[in-house]
Amino acid sequence: MIDVLYFAWVRERIGLPRERVETRAGTVAGLVEELRAREDRYAAAFADLSALRVAVDQELADFDAPLDGVHEVAFFPPMTGG
Image (cartoon, rainbow, N blue to C red; front, side):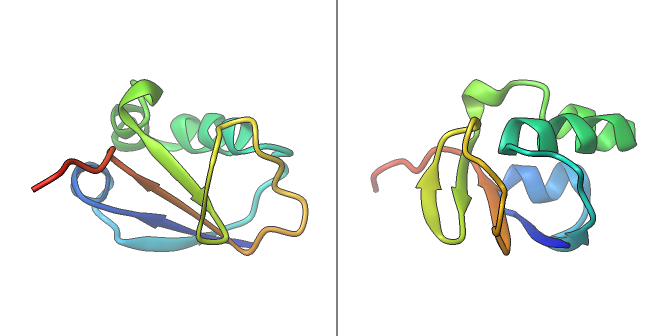
């Protein structure tokens, strides 16, 4: 089981701030594919991966990052200055 966290508009589209997910995915990209297949709201949230960033166990990562031993994956839009 992996804790999956959603922030900003990702959370708004999915309707949840976090959930525990059982996955067979080996990478973040594989997890995204599993989530997209769940429901339309997930497909909408993950439609454009170039508009998303990901953190694995609170460290910025790429979508090809492995999930072996990972406890938490977070999805969020790129940060802007302000």
